[in-house]
Length: 297
Length: 242
Image (tube, rainbow over all chains, first blue to last red; front, side, top):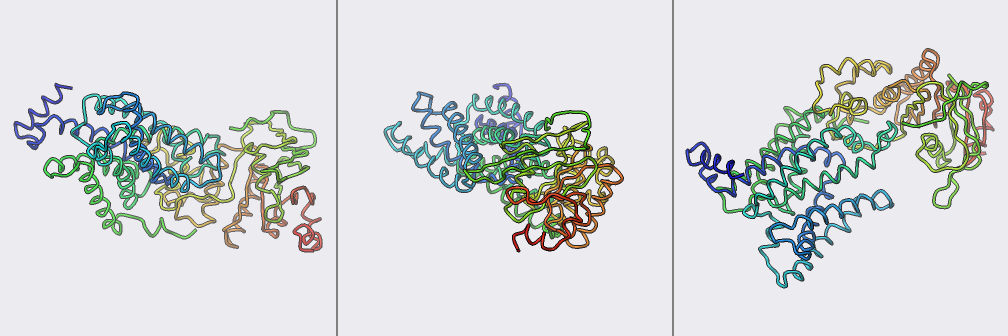
């Protein structure tokens, strides 16, 4: 890792990159942005198709409880991995289980859990730390680039590699199950199994990106690049690639800008992805096929 | 996909046999004592009022419904069942073309990584079976009811199934589309030897094309040829109008 930092900060000192990249935390951020951007973009296409936007937000909110649980079991403040990943995965899989086993709609289940995991998380956090530490809460809600450490980057790269490969090779089935589960079942695929697989992938990616983007804003990176891509693409292949490009521009561009502005990186990433979204909306009449996609049935 | 009992072609020409089928959901009997037999190379129609259990019967045959009684397939080949569902709910704004839609089902290479040009000829051939190869680049969300039915039928025919299950194939389709669809089904039966079990609500269409008709309303209320169903009092009785 040190070698990478030296090389990049060397480039920054030599003037090939903005001077802000002389700082190690910015280099870590940039690495994270390049790793997480494409994954969030690709996963976003399925999230939009399956209408899982607020499901994603619930996973983000569950991070608050996850961190508190990690601290409760003695994990260090800047590395509550077991608590975070463990609790968020449990919440995600449990919600999917309830959705498949009960008559409650997805929307209702999300409504029940969404605020609970945040509220209860804050209570647990206060109990565990015996005080209300606003900075800790803020770091979870809005992300905290400065706390990103080497372990985070290695964990992120490992998770991205595994999820990236598995997601790519199960993409057709995940997408078909997301598009229409009855048809997927009739073709001999197992839509419920692939739903669980996808939810697991999504949770890992969302939790991995929390330090950079924050629990409250992670929803944006999952939904907005895919929504922007939807405005201008003509087929599924373009949908995935344009979403990946939009998401990567948002994470890296947002990070770069946050180096110059006194605001959290997550907020600037939201800003960049929003600009891309509205830009694509403006281009829609020239590039999109609105008339066709909104056609009669 | 499904694992039906394989057997040599039955002496009486049956392809599917349903005997004493019963399905209960939440304490209610949806289907009870249902018996029917679908013969090789015929169009067999299922009719009945709304809520009669037609879709439940189709789902039981597909293997997706816990049931009592016997469902036996007498397949001789690949044992594949091609299925066209009744209503497909999906987000119409998702940018999936007809080409993508079929590719998702028929290829293992991730759709966003595969070379589209190499695959086009194959997908066009599949669509040609239901005269809709011109729809290949259209977005699925922008197709009319009739167009989408053709695409769904094309996917159900690939790879060639031994039994085609169609759930309300003519719903959401205009009169012209219905006639075209009829011709297509008759062509599949006569020229390609397909066996078709279809649920329908358009009685006129069914009388025109079906070799055998089974009416159900929780249980079988009629089982015979189209001619026997021509009697108006019979129709009124079946649909609870008389």
